Length: 296
DNA sequence: AAGTCCGCCAACCGCATTGTT
DNA sequence: TAACAATGCGGTTGGCGGACT
Image (cartoon, rainbow, N blue to C red):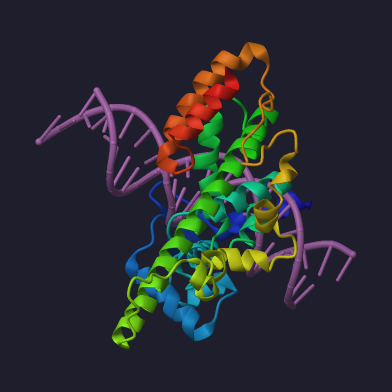
């Protein structure tokens, strides 16, 4: 019996499906449920894992009294119920990291997820398919094509870096303003009011903290990584190629690898892409104008 | 208001790999 | 070391909800 045969044999033994979202565990003659998990099932699984730990998913499912396959329990726990699962929108930093790591490793979702604490491979895969592949589709090019990879690398990723930096700067400004106000308040409350004197940012640079180091857990964790992608983008934008990136991070004329014949289509497609992307916080009007200049 | 479309994402499936007996 | 079981991984599907007509 070769590998495939015995795997299929395992699967046949494990479950036999009917047409009604029910499966039968032949060994235990038990109806198995599939589809969405109920709150009761979630509690049952969580309580059982809290008491007995995870692993041995098939026997866990049986001993917990869950009419689910071990696989289903494992997936539910790892992708949803685990306490350290990070929920909510993918941040700019995470987007950048996903793009970078995917450019290195391709569809190695699990490997990529290891570098995004709290994110699951499923979540990253979904992000890629729904957001990134959508843009490839809009550009009418293959997601693996050089054209699309260049678009990601020379447009999307630098733009994300700029957004991250801008966000970090604005956070610093808010923190600085708060610090200044607190200082002033403190001085006033101590009856040490100094007429006509205001505190500048320079005066208080020593008491401010950067958003990246104190507020942004991803940034902190990334900085601990052995292969530090995010920091590389922060510091070495020249990595994109000196001929491509201007000091502001913008792309030099002619950097895009579009053939002349494709320019009109690409311009139209990219403009539409950028318009659509406003909802994803990746592009703005400035980007659109810039790109149109590049394509003209 | 009702019907349709579409994007998102949880969950499933098949296969590969790893662990255990 | 072969057989089997458990786990991991990536592709795909289907249901839900919001947007649109």
